[in-house]
Each structure stands twice: as structure tokens, then as C-alpha cells.
Image (cartoon, rainbow, N blue to C red; front, top):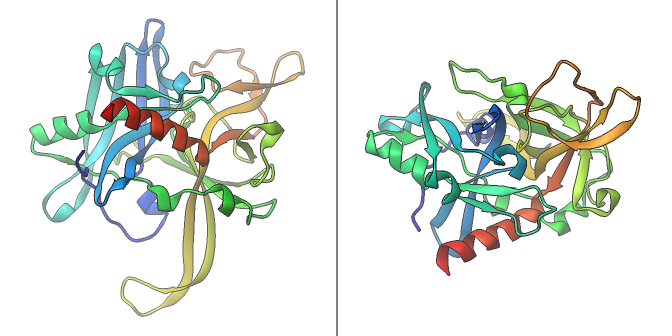
Amino acid sequence: MKEAHRIELIESIEQLSYSTIRIEAKTESGTTTGSGFCYRIAEDMQPGQWIPYLITNKHVIEGAIEIRLTASTSIENEKVVDKDIFSIVLTGKEVSNNITYHPDENIDLCGINLFILIKKARDLKKEVALYYIGMAEKFSRNELEKLDAFEDVIMIGYPNGIWDQINNKPIIRNGCTASHPKKDYNGKSEIMINIPSFPGSSGSPVFYKSYDGIRQDKNGLILSPHLKIRLLGILYAGPIFNLQGEVEMSSNALTITTNSPSTMNLGLIIKAEKLKELEEEIIKESFI
């Protein structure tokens, strides 16, 4: 277990733009897109060491025979070169050997080991420029209890596969909670958010965002509100209005058809607390 390369940026939304990876999954029926974010596994087992994983939904890579992952690289002095884009394609055993599924079949989460991406980049004398979300950056159940019914959130991902291809940047969208974040929506560890859910957005991280306190800017001159960001959950589904006029809850279908039902500008996220069970499964597979 070895610490992966990690860039350090100022504490801003920009930092989070390096936490996501665009996923292309090739299946027998075609190629689809999804979103994922970088996460530190087993961070508390040994100080300074952790396992780099990409978190996404099971349905994003279900049936995949090939998976393409894309990241920016950094060069001397850890300067990020957004336009220097590095991609790898996992095939065959590389797919099955590097994916771990959440042990509960009803929880649509899985993880892809990123060691293979990091190793292939280093073989070419490159370093991937990624920011990994850690334990300190996600909400615990106790912290959720302190939230109000209406909170600001942002979601980062690749709706309909859209991205800034030249600079390798995801799409960042702003919204708010639509159900009370401290409550389990319909009895499940989920939250409804007021951000549209589109194909390709599956696996997008959703962050709580607020400004509190004061801080100095990078020049140490100006005092400004301190940006507080916490991982709230992972998008996996959203309500749709079908052609019969009925509302259905659906995981994001990854293919688009001419008679697709319309979204209701809402999305359903799995609470970040469910990452703990996936992490335990990964640790079990890695060390036992």
C-alpha cells in the first residue's frame, strides 16, 4: 500500500475539478459514459499511506468489456498541464481484477483501483494530476444532523458525456438539497437534490458548500469567507416523467434514445456514509 500522487491546490472549487474522472465503458451493445471521483481507501490504517480508488456506480460499468479512464498530468514542480491528457483502457482481466462492488446489491456503488492508471502513467514518465477525497472531507452521520432542510450543493461530472475535451475539465453544476439531508429519503440512506440527473452524470460526487469564518487569500492580504466543502453523496438516479405521464425513479440509463422520457430537474444521491461499507469490502479483498 503506497501513497499515490496527489496535487495540492488552493482551497477552492478548482481543487475539486481534479477529483473526477470521465469513464467510458464499452459493452456488447456500444459505448456509454459515466462519472467517477477519486477517493482514499484505508486512510486510517497507516499514517500517510492509502489506496487510490475511483468511486462510481455499479450500473456505469455493468457489462463492460473495456473501460477508458482519462486524467490530466503534472510535470516538474508538480505544475498541472491540463492539456496533457493521459488515458488508459482496461480490458479483459484488467477490468474484473480491479473492480470491487458494494456488498449490498441494493447499493449502487463500486470502486476501481487506480494503481493501474498511476503505474501506466509512470511507465511513460508521467504523473497523473488527481485530487483524492478523504475521510475529513465527507459527512458523518453526526454532522448530517446539524444540517438544515435547505443547503447549497454542487455536483461535478460529465452529463451526457459532456466535458471540456481540450482542458480535460468536468462540468460543475450548482443546486440545493430537495429533501432534508439529515433524513433518509423514503427510508433509504439517500437524499434528493435539486440538480437535473442526466445520462453520464451517474457516479458524480455531490458536495455540500458553505462559506463560514474568514481566511487570508494566497497573498495574505485580504480577508474573505472561508469555503467549507464536504462530500454529501454520490448521484445514481433521478425521477423521470414518462410518456404516459407517470413519475418513475430510475437509475441513469446510459444510452440516449429519441423517445427518452424527460427529467424532472431532480437527482437522487447515495449518502457518503455508505462508502464505509464499500471501503471495508475493498480492504477485505486487498489484505485477506
